[in-house]
Each structure stands twice: as structure tokens, then as C-alpha cells.
Image (cartoon, rainbow, N blue to C red; front, top):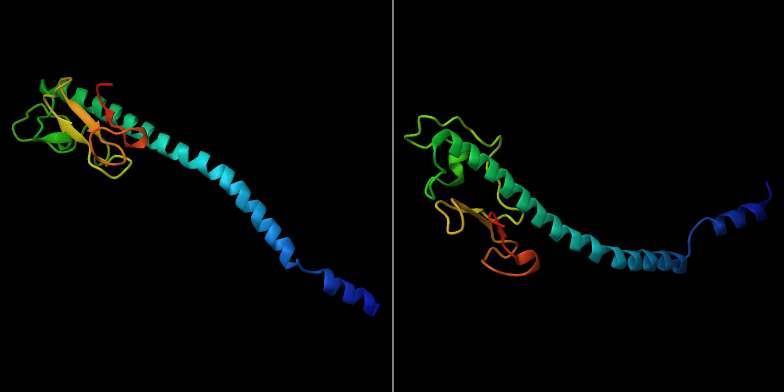
Length: 144
């Protein structure tokens, strides 16, 4: 083989620092455009997940009430959907197939019965874990 051909291959076989920097900058610009939209959807999906979980708890609570003629008390809480409370002869649970999850932000759901708004109130306080708030910090409520 011709030595000049081999030398030209050796010279052209890699990327220059400038070419690599240009690629990194382009990737960074694309990420800065896509990331805010993606993370905005993440917050919305957590709220939708909390709402769906509250609706599933509601169905399980209604089934509990059909069997026992009442909702679990505040003291019994959502645990009554998984473990039989004392004195309930018609309990036909568990009413949930798995352990009671925390809300999507890692907080416990707040359950009370009788509730202020309905026979029971079930609340996720959102990302901040406190009553009130806006956006991802807003409360997800069983009666809405």
C-alpha cells in the first residue's frame, strides 16, 4: 500500500476538539428545549396518579361499606381495607390487592370518616405535603 494513503487515513480517523464541542453544544441546546416540557408533564402525571389512587380507594371503601354497613372509622383508617378490624363479622377483605401505597410524592393519604364533605374524606396534600397550594403543591381531594 501507498504510505501517503495510510498517513491520510491516520489523519482523518478522529474528530477534532471543535467538532466534539459543536456536537455537545447542539445536544445541550436540544436538551434545554425538551427538558422543561418533560418535567412539566411529570408533575401533571403525579397529580393524575394521586387522583386515580383516590378513586381506587373510593371503590374499595364502597365495597367495605356494602359488606359492613359502614365505612372504616378514622381510627381504623385505610388499613381496614387490608386487615380485618375487630368486631366486623361481615368483613370480606382484603379489599385492596396490595399494601396501601403512599401518594406519588411519598406522603401518607389523609383519611377521615365521617368526613366534613362526604361520608369519608380522602386527601393527598400534593408535593409540599401541606394543605392548600397551587400547581403540583395543590391538594387532590376525594370529593372533587
